[in-house]
Image (cartoon, rainbow, N blue to C red):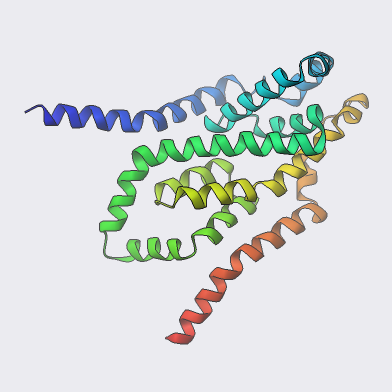
Length: 243
């Protein structure tokens, strides 16, 4: 007789992590948008640079933790955090910290969604014998390519690229590999902008993130997207020939 209450509690616990992320994202959207900005970074630049010079390791750990929380809870300010990585730690170290923090945050969202809603949806998709199951099978046949596309196509929001794979039951190993390597190109671009941020502040200006859509930036990213899509295209062509 205790099975029903126990299952109910277990179901609530399974959904608790994803629920917490959604609630935090909503609250953060309305409360943190005015704080995690380039203006805040400019106003505190001297204090941050001084603290970095005196306590590099502590600032590095704090930066990674804050960036992780921004990604894990889908808070506003991810772009600011990425640029800050370049501003504080230069290109190589900054890119490393950005990729590490963003990847860990993505993993947290993945497991939160997989533990709750993702597990339920994946089971329903597996039990479905119609079009949904065919789509799921097609996804798994091209899992690596699709995951890389989600990371490389600039139009796909980072939160969506973290959440969607968990909901359709992709392998965590493939998700982790494509996340780490897939976000490196974008991380380099954002970090590079941050490296020159001091000069931008000295001119009394704010960083221009519209640079991300310049041909010399967007072109290589789209090229990588095409390469990621090639295996899908080749399989599709081969499948039609066999038919």
